[in-house]
Length: 324
Ligand SMILES: Cc1cc2nc3c(=O)[nH]c(=O)nc-3n(C[C@H](O)[C@H](O)[C@H](O)COP(=O)(O)O)c2cc1C
Image (cartoon, rainbow, N blue to C red):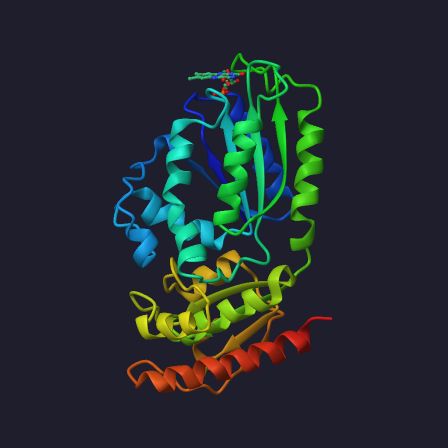
């Protein structure tokens, strides 16, 4: 399971940094893979309102949001937003990332595409502020709520601390460790003990991408799904993206990767190969099943549709078979 943190404080070794590091350490102890992005150190260009995303579903701005943050937001099981309060909201650096996620909003609400992870992703907020007023976290709560909605994450809760000003105040807080442990246990609970399935094909550009997207979409948080290829291609197949869009499934921000990379992140209980069983690395205790599916790449789009429908049917059967 992947927990992605967006760290929004520019202060080195400050309170937000302490809070998110404590959260991520606890998540790792619970078996999660974690990635924390310090957004203040990234090349992030604020939204320029070109509105290309609203029409075409992608952002033309080239920076770390596009290269790194969009794909990770789609891969994450849990997204953690962490920021100090700056004028009753999050830091400008973090807000810039969130504004760029208008692209996710547009894909969901304008283009009516469904994120395959929509039924399983969860979101959590961490925040600190110096003063003690009742409304201190209202702004950040609201911004985070709409951000989580755009990236299809269910807002699971928050840990917010008032009266935190000096850089070491958070570390000295008497209940923070217990608070974080409780929060992490509750946020990660549905992801623990999930069966893990790896879908494998040669290029990881087409069949295994479709299968994993269907599996993730249909099984929600009951399965941990990954995919890889024995000879990964450069990009996912654009015809495959088109036929999945016809089904309303959004295949954006995905790229092929190797089987070794996939297995290094998720140790599968099941490996579903698509005619490439012999190229699959040995994984102890994994059950291998081979689906005899022709590679639709380079064939007319009708054939891509046939393979898509066949995969959807097989994924439904697989879910019935392996999930109680
Ligand atoms: C630009 C700026 C704006 C701030 N605005 C607020 C505010 O509106 N309300 C508040 O309680 N604290 C405010 N603070 C204080 C910080 O939220 C507080 O010091 C916090 O502990 C900093 O966290 P950090 O160490 O993670 O950066 C502000 C601080 C800065 C630098």
